[in-house]
Image 1 (spheres, one colour):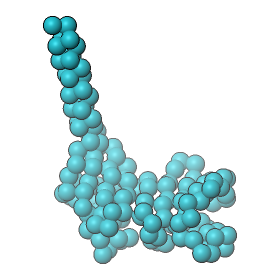
Image 2 (cartoon, helix red, strand yellow):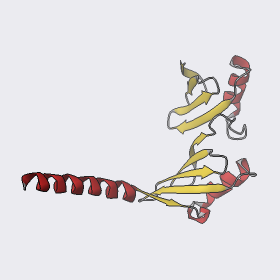
Image 3 (tube, one colour):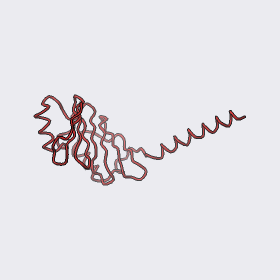
Length: 146
């Protein structure tokens, strides 16, 4: 009898944990749920792609958008982008600040930027050769990791 109770308790715990995870994010295909600034960003920088999926936190403070080529773009509650991950494809140069783009062209001429994160203290990029470079708000290199 005790074994059955332990089993039922474990099953209940797993079920509750799964239910809690499902409540943290809502998945949608309707791009109208995105803030207008996010919709405008996608249309401006990825005009040939369509929105495949939108995940939104319950409180609506974070959005993760997956595009038709599996590029993901994260937005904050105001619709400002925080991360663009293009997999192995190049991030559109219209997104990358000029000084960062110039640095990459000079220091890594054969590489492309495949991911960019906008942070409070600057930017972090990943190149196609898996090198990560962190820039401060003045676009100076702070750290390089291979």
